[in-house]
Length: 214
Image (cartoon, rainbow, N blue to C red; front, top):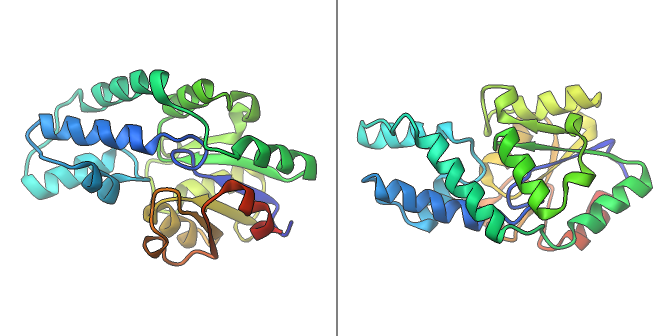
């Protein structure tokens, strides 16, 4: 493998959480008087930290979301995770191959540390990720599309950005990886390939990824 570090996005790449979280986010925004469809939530917010929701709502309407918005949103999402969340097909086989090949990996997510851990525990991925391999937008202040999170992950893992590859499924994540000077491959399980511009390649099944990275 020509990379020293594989950096995974979390939601939609490791755990199948995007349909759950975007359904809940769209419903909650609509409930608060900001009508939002599931498709609009995916288009505007997929791959971003929650501060982007606050920023776009205020920019578009001049109104601020409630002070307890984040806590309520996360509570609803975590409850749904306990009922519905599963690991993305093929992820555990892929991680096993990386371990066997001696390739380092980590996760860098716009979600909070709590959200990442809750999801990993429910999906059975907690055994694959040590605490020091988990990075959140909480760690850097600016989420994707800023490159800060990916650069932070590379620095903490001790690998130069040009020796890293990012696995992403959102336009914001692809933009962040490119800004960090990293190669990036686009997972097209939810997002059409034509939305993931600037990637080094596309794949729709985790079993296809080792060949792309070889």
